[in-house]
Length: 250
Ligand code: SF4
Image (tube, rainbow, N blue to C red; front, side, top):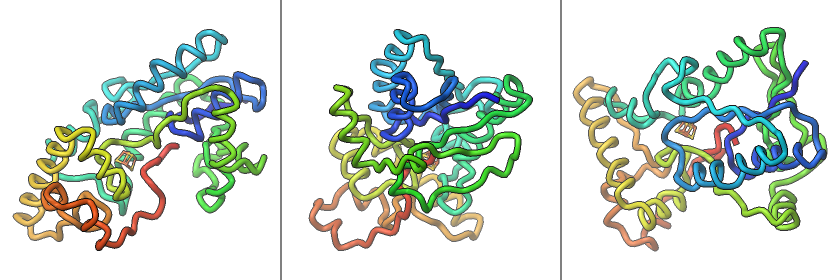
């Protein structure tokens, strides 16, 4: 049975690919399911760092495109939500399911029909996130937790390996974004923040028209259009309740 890394191209799963190439853990290849709405830095890390390193070492990274046969939505995640006049919600995480979990499962069904072990990049400090797979043919395994390697340990390893440290993986407008993620988006990518505001406005209108409760895209319950005008220090008045960060596949 093959062992496959579920790659999100954040700190933990990128480290797993590097560790595998260095012979520190065992895996056969890695799969990255592209939502089409990843952060620019994530694509840059993948294209400029991980893929060249993998190619130099004959290690395979499979990229599943959002428009491939494995993704039934066929659109970048945030574009699909805009067309549906909705935002991704934290409650059911159907975004993770539709753009990450199910495309990878469809790929595995085709290429690993007898089953495979799936490495999830949770570090020792995320032990609470461990759970068994609901597909016995594709059990989850957690080598970073087995080896008691924390995120802090990984940051030191990146330095030791002379590799740049990847940003936290995830979509640029994710409901699990923390305050700092939105502040970074506002400072570094104001056009993307405007797109997130547009998405939130469209979704609000639709939800209110349908008589439903509207939830903001930001986890700290501030309308992004208000957030855009606020001074950074005033944002600290709002509590933050995101509980697990946006790295849905690490
Ligand atoms: S990063 Fe956020 S928006 Fe993107 S799939 Fe994961 S939970 Fe959904």
